[in-house]
Structures are given as C-alpha cells and as structure tokens.
Image (cartoon, rainbow, N blue to C red; front, side, top):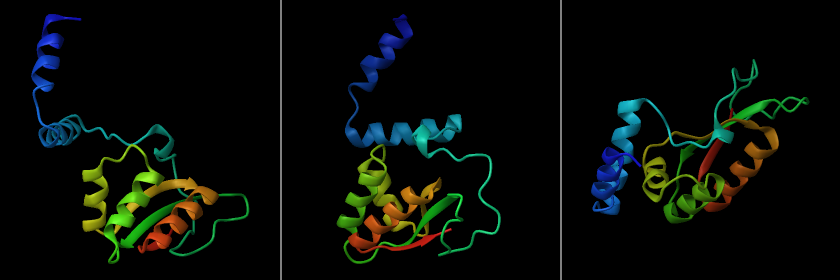
Length: 130
C-alpha cells in the first residue's frame, strides 16, 4: 500500500464507532455517493401511473416502499429495516424511523416490495407501496 493509505488506515483505526459513522456520512456527502447496495439502486424509471397503495401491474413492474410512520415499537421496526437491507447501519435504520416518511426500497420488484412492506407492518410500521 502507498504510504498515504497506510497513514489513513492507522488514523481511521483509532476512531470510535460513532466517529466512524460520522466519517462515513461526511464522505458520502462530500463525494455524492451512497452506501446503498447495488441491488437497491434505482433503475431508469418507475412504472407510469403507479399510485400509493396500488398493486403492481401484471408484468411485475417496480414499486417503492415508503414507511410513513414507525409506530410505537421502533426497535422492532429498526430490526425489520436491517433485515430488509442488511447494509443499513443501526444509526441509519434509527434515522429512518425518526425521519418519516422514508423510502425503504426504491424501484424494487413487486414481490420484494410486498415482502418488505409485510415485514414492516408486522413490526408495527405504517407503510405505503408506490
């Protein structure tokens, strides 16, 4: 590794978990990137005419899962969010429960969106499919 990289690794390894979380957020903001998994990346466009709560078209169009309220059991909702998207940190999932409405999945396959919505509803959240 280059000397600069070695020095950065050494400095980063001294940070606390909270400081690392802040570093990741700052880098994402500065570089204009997201830690979202590639599978959850948005395709070119969503199906035309899709509305809140509407079922997916027969051809299996993409849907967006929006959590409109976390409910009283936020811990269960945080766990469900992390099951749906394992790449979410605990802080990210907690932030989503506090900043509703929040997009949980964007342009997901209809069956994936429905499964995610059911998990969130079972955990106590209020969810819309768009």
